[in-house]
Image (tube, rainbow, N blue to C red):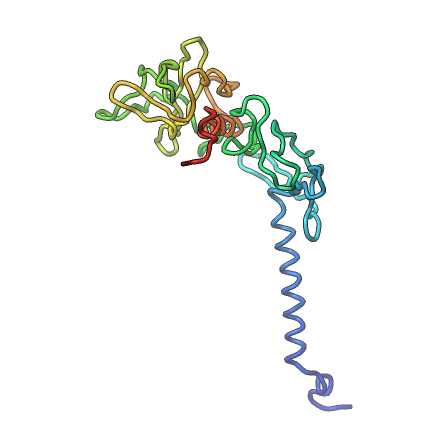
Length: 256
């Protein structure tokens, strides 16, 4: 056959275009499904009675190396997935999906309102790679605004209205000019940090309803007294979060 259009004379152009679109769309869905698994996967499942990793539909993508800020690299997903986490908790009953009951100190069990993510054990950083959240004593150009209540020197009272210690410093997010943590010198010795959003500053005292005064001594401590890592932030926030449910047995009772 010769002449103009001889090759495509018997083609249904609309069907060809539609088929190409369907193939493209399927490829796009596969690509987005795999790329969406670079964080948070493999999932942990207990569908068959034991906790194990599961890659989900289409499995896991091949690992890629991403360059991060300040010359570091990050592999996602990890070539060797982490083993399923062993929690300090047991299921309330034998049905799959049963709620978890903490074992040992419920404030440190890492479940319920005390859950946390295993973030990188490095400080959050500012524009030039410096730690973003540091104590006020390390920021000579910062001060608490005149007219605002300065919590430094105030007593800290837990949910039982007993004193846990004294505020010795405040930790500032110098990128946002905000107080993120209150540093507490405990009555029995040592220092811990309390998230600012769990504190209420009065005229002459600081109160916190999340935990009791005696429970401050078990707040996770930081390795470096001058900086805090992302993982340490998670654990400290989780401790106070857990207190909202587990600080006293009465808090776990049904709401009337």
